[in-house]
Length: 289
Image (cartoon, rainbow, N blue to C red; front, side, top):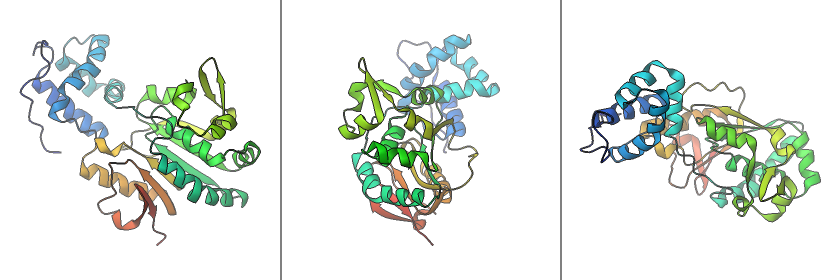
């Protein structure tokens, strides 16, 4: 990452003694090194608004002293990274991915499970869980009896995110009923329970998923390969070299002919590009050989 030049202004009305252009530049570098997130100059206000509560709660008072804290304290650094992570998502986001999942991938999943072979899926950057539950409802399908048979087989989903508050909400699996409007009604009826305007994912769905905290730029304590990986609207926060390294790691984590789903404004580029075949809008299949 090239050195970030300091913005001309930080936050109007905030003393430079509290938050300066130099503070922003240092924070941008620290966050990039820790999580690969790029914070351009125009994000100075966002950084202030997201981190000011942490500065206050830590008792450091100024951003310069808070910077000293996060350099020395890994737990506090993780809080800062989580605070600067965008967790906007919703059920059945980019619906064409779920159309492909239902039509092209689900039959393969059923065949493997019926043949007593394991199926492993990864929702990378799962945020507050809407993507993960959308994937599972699509795979189990509208027929509850058939879906229960699939759930009893060797089907497991790993769902990871860098933000503890997002993972906690995903694990709780409770959402306003209005949030599930994009989900087909037959899937909602089969796999959710609604009460007092709140929807809870069924115990069957929850038994299949393992939610974990994970920094995609760090070590992946993962064994085995995945049949498909969703990592959508995460790489847009990374620069090109970081994106290319991540795509290469995803390729290595996929089974031959496994699928990678990415966000609508993201692309597979770099050394791993030749290892993938584009099979649909932002849907890539790892080449078998």
